[in-house]
Length: 81
Image (cartoon, rainbow, N blue to C red; front, side, top):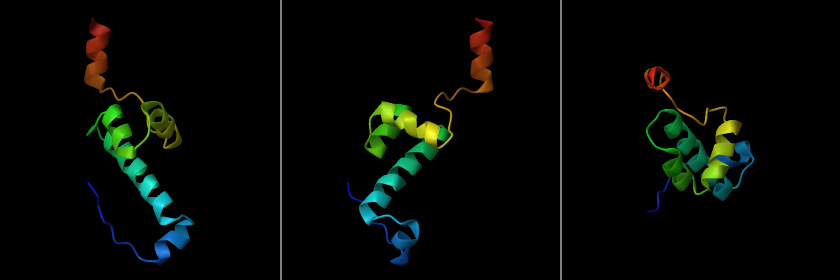
């Protein structure tokens, strides 16, 4: 599927990126955020971003997002076992 996004012409010059590079970064940033919010898995996020899961985990580090998403309740449940 193809998505068309309209942006001001000067957006790319201020970001110092070509449109294709911006598109890749936008996909990655969206994937990282959706993963951080718990909306998608690492595997799905990597797929959306168009990169390997290992590269996605590296990107999580760059964005300062924990690679392991565990709630307090899940952690307490694990400890109780």
